[in-house]
Image (cartoon, rainbow, N blue to C red; front, side, top):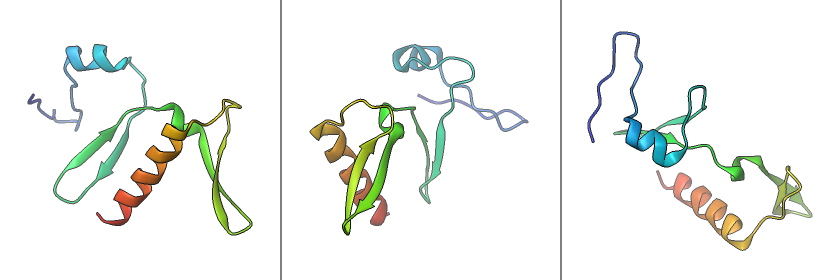
Length: 86
């Protein structure tokens, strides 16, 4: 789907996409410059996860008190791995 940038640099995300992803006015998105493209990252509960080092190992600690699932950990691992090779 295509969209345009206005004079102020704003990008309009089509309503169907906003609705599908639960985006409302004021929702913060992370913008990542990946060289040949810009990526808009959606808010995610994993943003509340903290990577801490303990005894020389990285450990994921959920700031919200919600237990971190294996899927969450694997996703963070994959994201970190992917970011190293960009």
